[in-house]
Length: 125
Image 1 (cartoon, rainbow, N blue to C red):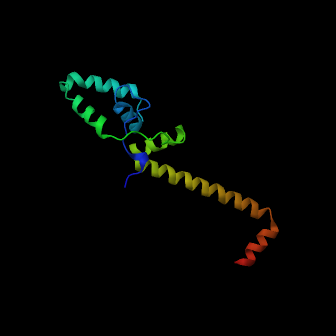
Image 2: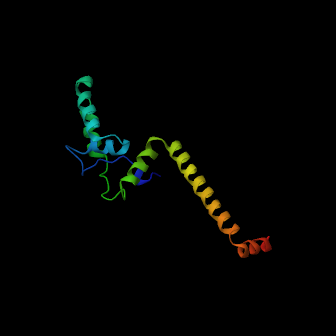
Image 3: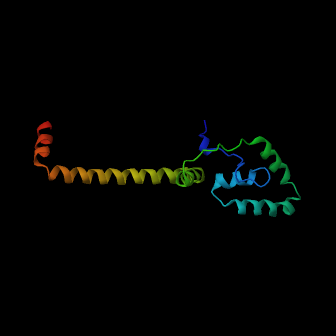
């Protein structure tokens, strides 16, 4: 079961011909111009064979939903998930540990400066 944010789509909003290169660019996080230039460079190398997969993808891929991402930051996050899920999971764990540490610091500060709360917590133990 794939999330809609981890699926390859053709991008009709940034398209030049069928939106396949724009969809690949969105999926990988690479600028669309580089994907298009790479596709053009593959034409003489493959003897024009690149047209067949391009046309097949143009007909088989679904169109990108109009509001797939809320903002650029979310788009970058999902591109990172597609590129390296393990690295993204490590980054999220590191952020959560940092938030947990900061929350513990706030709790320590608040409890140590509030003797009534400190006594209540000790009474509950």
